[in-house]
Image 1 (cartoon, helix red, strand yellow):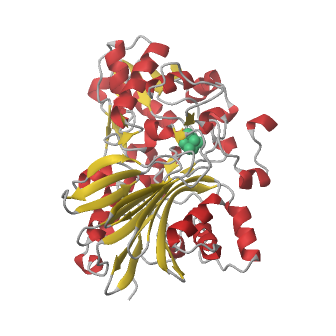
Image 2 (cartoon, helix red, strand yellow):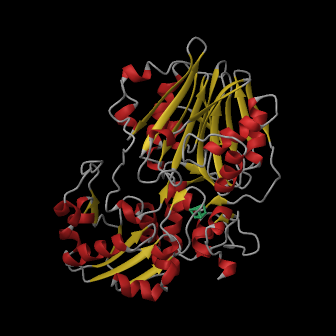
Image 3 (cartoon, protein in one colour):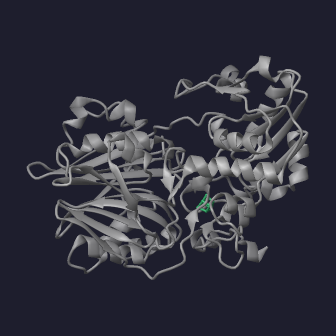
Length: 498
Ligand code: SF4
């Protein structure tokens, strides 16, 4: 019998408040060498839920029953906690995926687009879960269809399975290497065969992937995860990040490492530090929380203003607001309180509820705000719709002045590497200067951290080296480390062409 959430037209609502944020699209997790690995994967995916809330899936392997899978729409906690479901996923090897689509049938997610994907090859089956975005997927898809491949989904990730099927290599890791050499863009892949857990990161290392260990020295189990916060939830030890361009093949005998791609200068997504990753994760050897606090410190140095209070736009603006307050000496206060229990309460909001917009999720602490000059610290401005509503709420509560300080540079370019961004024209910073944005938002002042300031906050003492940037920062700079060839073919104009 189909699970109630196995509906092909399922769409999870985008809350009016969340519409004005960039969204990471996926999280991946895999475990080998522990009893009932799928339970560990479910916990890991729960910790990665911020990376994708639309759907999730788990594939496991057990020598007696072979490969088993379950894919569901909605949150991990609503699906992968039932004993009756988890019993169908036996074995000591499992991988999983949480999804928010950036490619595929966006807004009308079909079950066929929910990962992990599975392929049956002559040497056995393999399942893969992909975080990132393949920038030449359209061209690859056309070529593969011309050569006889039959696609089951609209996802870019499925290309990897078809490319593997066409490879002449003798084993699955080698076929995966072959396939991924054809792929451009960003990929952190977790895959499994009957006996192997495989992790691969693209040569630029745009999206994160880490290795952890569970169990004992004598009988270790191994974990791959998008972020370290998901290791903590299962009591795993963080061993190291998978290096850009590295493939690890993990068996009961241990971890083997290869570097199958042409080496390139790494370009990790700098926005992972600003917003996407959880603050309790470690990325690039740095605490994400500490980096965000340091962004606030830099912002206070670059953009000081006289005020009475520093308030975060919760939750993602909180560490930067703490840093701003510490550096400026202006008191930190929870001037805005977030309702933690919004969840999916208003799946089909009525017009009346929809009109309440951001008030559904955020409320101003009036007693604190009245008569004050308030600095609001937020992580980013995308369309600017939410910033404007928050400003209105703060003024309604009696604030004397509102000053926005933004913990990222102006977002003026779309991301093509696994983050959902509006079209360029919808990005406020693509069409307006900082002063025009200030006027549009009707605030007393508006300042963004500079790109150099952001680089200093992530540990590059000299800021951004324009000749050799250390990170992907394309959504701020328009400097795309991999040409988004599908998008260019569809008419997207790169900065150089403007
Ligand atoms: S374009 Fe922006 S969001 Fe996308 S990978 Fe680069 S820095 Fe990250």
